[in-house]
Length: 191
Image (cartoon, rainbow, N blue to C red; front, side, top):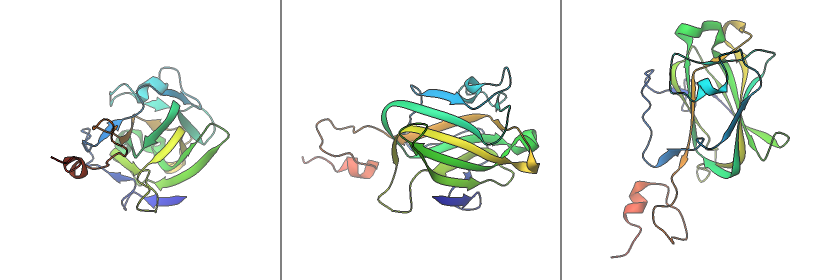
């Protein structure tokens, strides 16, 4: 388990704007996933996390930790999570400490990252790669994002958007391995 702060590589703000710029080698992974949350206020449910509207938000309604569960039918490779939060608008509802967990199901989750955020506004980048340089992604059936605490000791939380990205499938058919960068794909065939 790694603990990171918003001042370092993990948990860093991406420009503080609403525009999300993602590497072309990555694709959004959660379009066909099953989403659930631990609790929500009426009108501020899980659908608000996926509507691409920065004015709406998921709002929890219960005891901490507040969790967002993303389940897949098969194992999926995930590389980075982007959260859109806005401390200027949400203040005590803004997450200050987040735990990222992965595993085969609800009873087999392992904490892989803990990120502390300091008054974040905009897209937050959380890399799922481990300390090992060869560990570029997490291969899992389930991802859980747990809000452990909020700024100003707030009870409920607001998260406005979530995007999870992983590597694109191998663009070259019948290739026994998958390249992770466009540079390698460029030189992958013999002419």
